[in-house]
Structure formats: C-alpha cells, structure tokens
Amino acid sequence: MAANTNIDAVSKDLEEVSLKTPNSTWSDYDCNIAEKQCRFCFGDEESDRKSGLPSSWMTPCKCDGSIKWVHERCFKQWLNLAPFPQQSACSTCGFIYRKSWKMKSLSEWSCPPLRITFWDIIEIGLDFYSTFKLFRGMWQMLEGKKAVFGQICYFIFWKTFIFTDRRILYYKSIAAAMATSFFEPQVRDVDDEKQK
Ligand SMILES: [Zn+2]
Ligand SMILES: [Zn+2]
Image 1 (cartoon, rainbow, N blue to C red):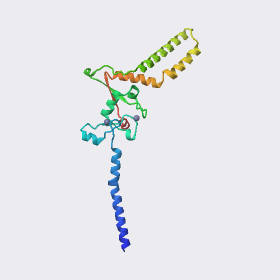
Image 2: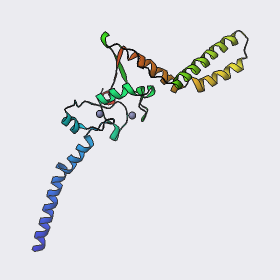
Image 3: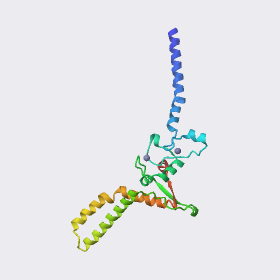
Image 4: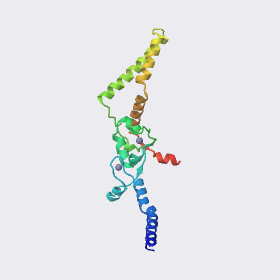
C-alpha cells in the first residue's frame, strides 16, 4: 500500500514536471533564441529598452546565428566607415547587399567620401594603364602592326589579373561611394525579401 502511494506520488510529480516543462523551460529557451543581439555594438533589446534608444533591427545578409542581427543605426554607421568592398558585400557570408537609392534633398548634398590610399592609386593606375595598353594593342593589331597571337595572350593576361570580379566590385563600390553624395543608399532586409 505504502509502495503504491509512493508510485502515485512519483507519477504525480512527473505529470507536474511534464506540464511545467513546455510552459517554463521551453519558452525561456525560445526567448533566448529569439533575443536579438547586435553584431556591432553587442547591444540587445533589453539594453535598448534601458537606454531608451530606438530598437529597430535588420538582417542585411545571409549570416545566421549570433551575427544575424544588427541595429539599423549601427549598420548604417558602419556602412559609412567600411572599406569600399565591404560596403557592397558582407565579408563573412559574401552576400551582396540589396540596395535601393533615394535622392537626398539639395541641402544634404556633400563631397564624395573617398578614402583612397596610396596603394589604391597605384592599383588604379596599373588598371588604367594595362586597359589602355590592351585597346592600343587591339588597334595596332587591326592596323597589322601587331601579332594576333600576342594580343590574344595579352587579353587573357588582362582578363585574369586586371579585369577580375574583385576589381569590378571595387570600381562599383567607388561609384556607389560617389553616388552617396547625392543619393542615400538603403540596404534592404534579407528577411523582407523572403516574405515577398
Ligand atoms: Zn548595435
Ligand atoms: Zn553576412
């Protein structure tokens, strides 16, 4: 009889535990997963509430886990300071940001924020020189002054080392940086795109 009572008590305990589990433990767990933390300032929704800052969040790329979320304000600030290639694509997942451009009002127009280093200038110079050399060579080939085979070799060299995807992205980001003088880039949220 005593043993039976014990079993009853244990099964009652178990029932209570199983009833409690979905309500307390699992919902806490879900909360932790859903809790957003900013990749840049490490702030979360709780710290936003405390500081009274606007809590607007976005996922600009396909990164997941702890680096998925960023504050809109932190991302914008970072985008203004980031090196050119990182302004167009995420350096972690490689996702090219989806941007839309909004014209700034005349009073907000500014000088292009170009931060070009000495090595950038050398690289740009080399790009322009070798591209100029390619077109001059092509012209000379048409005039019969240069061998076709040599020009083809030079074209392959140019395509492999000069006109690379990395360099194209670099020039695109310079163009984008210049455009920020007159237009405001707005990076669209990856999750918004999925819902559409
Ligand atoms: Zn932040
Ligand atoms: Zn990413």
